[in-house]
Length: 124
Image (cartoon, rainbow, N blue to C red; front, side):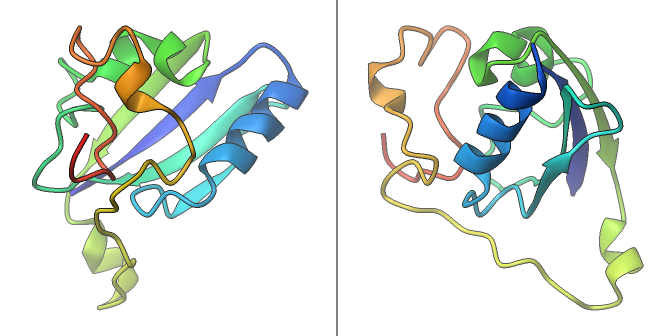
């Protein structure tokens, strides 16, 4: 399962900052400029341990609270059977022992309300 996000941010510099910060995330193998200068496009992979960024369209924390990632607004669509498009290619995903974007998730005041931590981190 995967999903696509469009993040609307304050300006093109903020879009570039987010792209740079999250470019190493193993669960966001595609993160690039969006259709507009102040937008970011993300292809996100859903892992079994997905809590933060819930991939349901009704309960997605990044859509409900876009400020968690520094966005003003977030649009999301869930994509099923996306693997058929890639013809057997698999993105390398997985868990790490620290946030690959260098965020201090454990210090975030929203960690459990409703954010449940970075899905790329196995233990927080």
